[in-house]
Length: 247
Image (cartoon, rainbow, N blue to C red; front, side):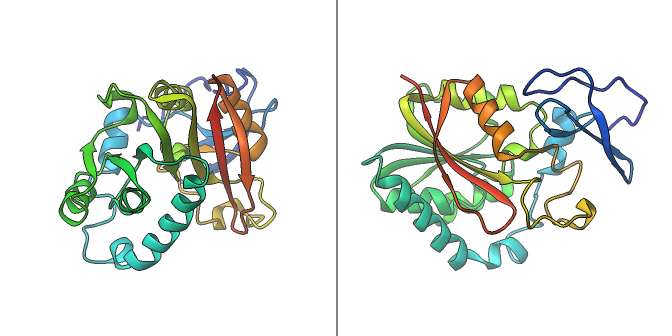
């Protein structure tokens, strides 16, 4: 990523052109919007730089992330069960599906389940272990699937994208009217976040480009025809919500 002294981009949520420096960390600078408190990296990584970050993002499938499969399946089943109380089957898309655990849980609940991810290693693993799902290496902005989805699931992904408006617009375009988006992301305003943000495990530029709080995330969703239907309690510093596309 170029570290030249570039003009700071306006806020992606409220459009403010007067962001204030939030922190410099290593070679990166993050700014805070005075209007809505969105904190964002400037300059943002390019698409090619993002794809490089997520080339074998978990360091293979024999250690680390992929050693916690039972826990990940339990969490996925709990979340999908919650969604299934509102949506009785239909089409389900996991944006950022990694190993396919939530796609597998959605299939168990009677959904026709799909998953997309930038990490080719994770997609290959998901195809091998959960053949009931349909997996594609793709960004949501480029995903070619013309039939709308009843549910789109997106956990710990939006903080990685360079353009939140393009990302959410692409999700909404693939969601049927009154369909649901389940979204999670770190919450930089959470009371349990370390006072020194550099000690927070979710603070990791340039992998995480955007840092939301519940209010500005809701404002972003409203811009794209989504209404927060329910926000769930998060003991860890995170936001968990269910949003519905307006008819």
